[in-house]
Length: 589
Image (tube, rainbow, N blue to C red; front, side):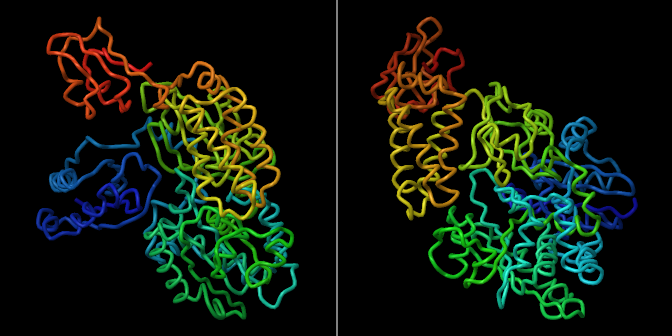
């Protein structure tokens, strides 16, 4: 057999699933002994987006490629035995012809083009894929105004949530007056269910470094910060290594590639405060102060770090820059929907079969992402809604799934594009409880600086808790809507201004669920425990005692082979008895 290669995905998702053990096994003396004279090239990469199937191993031999999912050490031994015998195992193969058509077909990888392809800890891999060619072009062939013109022509909007035109933002910094200018990469990714920035930093850190360096050339910045939350240790490790490699190769630091242009990058670890995703709060944190937003104007382009001009973009935004500069604006803006161009990376999570990371062109519909790429519902229940934009986003109902993904269309639903979190919910989700969950998150993360955010979200949360406990009234719903509008209008920063979005969108699209909670004292989805009753159907109960044995609070009574009863005053509504009953005799009401 010719030389073969196995590539193991070592992103956080893969490592958490056991991929490191698999990788180390492939490197072991045991494998070398079993293969004899067959040369095996073992490489590592990062997440290819198929988080639902981790750990993932890709096998290459001549023109043959097989992708295996859910690979543990035992199955890795099968792969080695298959290489040795010339008959590779057929089980655990993923991305067959049908999967490629549904999962890969609709996607366009621009920001993620190297993720899951190259070794993120090897700059030679990045360079081999034409990495840093864009920087060379920007340094030697393009004045800074030309770089900005191409960025404006591309239509790239900030992928951190607000969607402001990147080229225009850079132009503000270029024209700003100051003895020093700064760039910031906002990697303070704090949305529940979101992992886009982490995946890019883990899988392709050099694209971000190259994008920032090009931005520095265009705007005249001398120093950059990558502000990454400390909860991303693997991303931090790989970014540090990438910065060091880039300096060794003269792509970063003093007199880059022999020119008179100098730019350096410092990695700053954040403590995980959600509010530091807001520009001015992030700046305060970089300076060593508590992360709290400040009034705008002045905007960071005028007075940012150390009161000097500063530009902030997020990870995905910078990762798109090298491709645009190397290939021209058309490379990016050929994917267009309304005023939105290019692609968008989404972290697909929740009640969907293929959870993971996807990158899709603007204009694709939510339904295509969820049903085709995501594979539809992972449960026996139909899909009900998606939450887009994280805690500051909104819930979009299933009947609007044909909405095209672009900034204007998503905003029209009441949600926002955000940084790219896309949480899928099925009919078992209570939308009142979903609103409560996200509001509790933003309320906890409020820095407390302004009154309506600090106190208004607290009062809103109290109302939602009353409703989910069966103690709410119709007046509470009216008050909830009124408070939401006040908090939106009077909060200082985006955290408070957008915190009511989950409440307002669920009130808009799922008001019947709120009314069921306050009028009927019932949770239609059977989620809010104070409103649930567990019932044993006497016609179906066989007296098998399976439910009795699993009830931790002794709420179920009955003798063997006789109908059982349940005491709902004691029952904690955990639902384990429902799962254990083989006769469908126990249900929620």
